[in-house]
Length: 385
Ligand SMILES: NC(=O)c1ccc[n+]([C@@H]2O[C@H](COP(=O)([O-])OP(=O)(O)OC[C@H]3O[C@@H](n4cnc5c(N)ncnc54)[C@H](O)[C@@H]3O)[C@@H](O)[C@H]2O)c1
Image 1: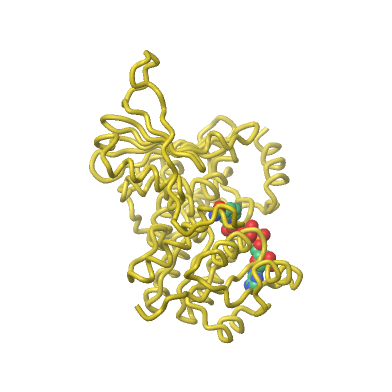
Image 2: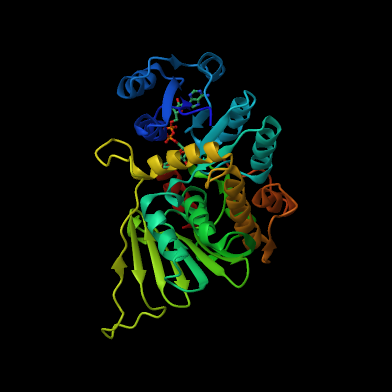
């Protein structure tokens, strides 16, 4: 191996850029060589924190001057596609925040460009590699729940379609870790208590493309006989406690909660005092991770897997291929509800199914909506009454 330290450039220095920078700064095998943001003040704040003086407002200039191995792209979702394509043109590996893109046409183009340039794409679904998921995976691989039958996942209460693009992207990726490959999806979407109509197709908050559905209940058929359900239900009040994944095996159950992992040594919970206690599993951290550092363990694990992936010349566990498969599932969920049928994956028509549906039903482009979730959801609540 000729490289011992990977050179990192961060494009976007606000919330998620700061989280990424802290993890790359803390990891012994990565060095941040450049920062870029359109806003000087953000460059200064983050640059001072992670002690990086190479600060740029133009990404091409940053890449040309600092020759990074990986460029992180933690920006608003509506910018992911353009920025990924611009950065990949330089022939560098990338990591982009989730969701990777807003539809399959974009995701395909990003993957194609990366393959043409011979570089890797990773999507920042850090929950899939974090300490609690490592604990779940260890128990699962040790056969503690026998054969996997079913996977349950839930969001935390955002409006369903937005929750799917924002949080469901993480959960579907987590579920893929165990389901491996999703063959088809079947979904039920309701808005205002009724199945969605083309008029319920609207732009997502936070620039996450086009969405529909206040409540989403989706079923995934994975390889073999494994099935899964994803709930993205709108709650009156957000509830992060609902954000969880459960694996049902023939001999027991495993539960992932953000930052925690649990094991139930029986497949059917009966409170009869025998084998009926959920046990906490020990979390697993990279040995060089310092819990006192400002880096979150999940972001640190994400960096750790990128370092290992590049060393081993393999894709990141949260690769662009997995990120695109997640978008296939999300678009499949929208399509299934719109057309009332099962959608086999990967779908051949890569256009956004909700826009296609609206157009086929004689509606024009969806109306404009505010970007911020609070204002967006107030307006949408008024519309649906
Ligand atoms: N993985 C997670 O846990 C998690 C959590 C929250 C949000 N997200 C995702 O993170 C993304 C948003 O990240 P954020 O909240 O930090 O975004 P943000 O909009 O707050 O910050 C993005 C920064 O990028 C800069 N920027 C945008 N375009 C640029 C360009 N062309 N050149 C240079 N700088 C540019 C902006 O000036 C801004 O400072 C979304 O995709 C969201 O889904 C992920």
